[in-house]
Image (cartoon, rainbow, N blue to C red; front, side, top):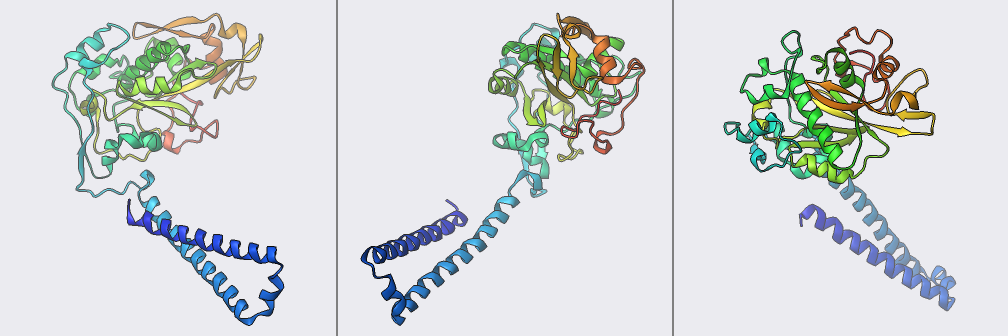
Amino acid sequence: MERAIVVPYLIISAFLACVSTQSGTMGKKFEEGAVHRVVGSPRSVLAFKGTWMKLVLVLVGLAVLGLIIESRLLSRMPETFVFDQNHICRARSLNASTITYHSDHPFYSALKKLSHAPVPTFRGNHSWLCEEDLRVQLSFTYCLPISGRKDTPFCADADRMDLLKPRSHNSTCYASVLHMLLVEVYEELKATGNTPLITFGSLLGAVRNGSMIPFTEDTDIGFMDELKASYELQEALWWKGYHMFFSGIWRVCVAPTHPLAGLLYNSTLPLTSKFSVPYVDLYEMTKVNDSYWDVEELEGSKGRLLPTDKVEPFSQVTINGEPFDTVHDPEFFLTEAYGEDYMTPKPRMDESNSTSSSGSTGTNRTAL
């Protein structure tokens, strides 16, 4: 146990002992009807004042030590990101050949055979990426820093298969990482008893081109009712190399332990910027009654409400040739979410400089 913890512990114990002794003495005097004699005795008055003076000094000491301990703890909190710039570490890298996936898609077969993927080395502040035990508290900060291109036509048909080919950050498409996230999170939601539905920007890309939107920064999946088996889902994604965390809503990003981390990691990016890495937003969709569904983050003509006949029975869309469940009337959903001109691409502004439409989650639904 560190001295910083032992010292206040001893002082607090002494303080409690003093209080206990004084309380016992005073209680006994009350019982004996002798309180008036304490007041009348100068010696007793001095002893009484001396005891309480000690208690005051102990309280002052505890306050000072509390500030010292708080400063010490704050200095160790992830938000400060204070690491020696010479500090070097390597995160544990998951071996894809030992992971059980939910399909036999060629991506998984190729990933299991991939032998040349390097294990990333983290230096300085990026050493937080080695702190697995702190990943929940780190939130976005534990997401692997990843960059990529968002231009068309280069990234018009971005696919997760592209990630299996070693390439520079200047030739990797952001949407390829988003496609990988979309598929794996969708599959894991189904495997844990949830009902996933493609929504918002991911649905928009599917309706427009049957692909991922090249210039978006996230992918969007809805789920029916409350998230079932959230811990099991979190763990299942973790053991596949993904970091699921709660920040306004549930989100998922690529963890430093991912089998492809060495190929995707960009050491020049900071850790502290929210929404600056590829990630998944998970939105709760609840059937309120026979007439309406409530869709988290939707801002349509009836607020968050969608008519039931526009939501179910569910329909399907394809993204990069793979089928995904979605709402019954995708066009109606997109009109409610983005307006009647939703088919016209509108590259959104930098998320770090934009104002959230919801005011709580940092999600901007005004342009895609």
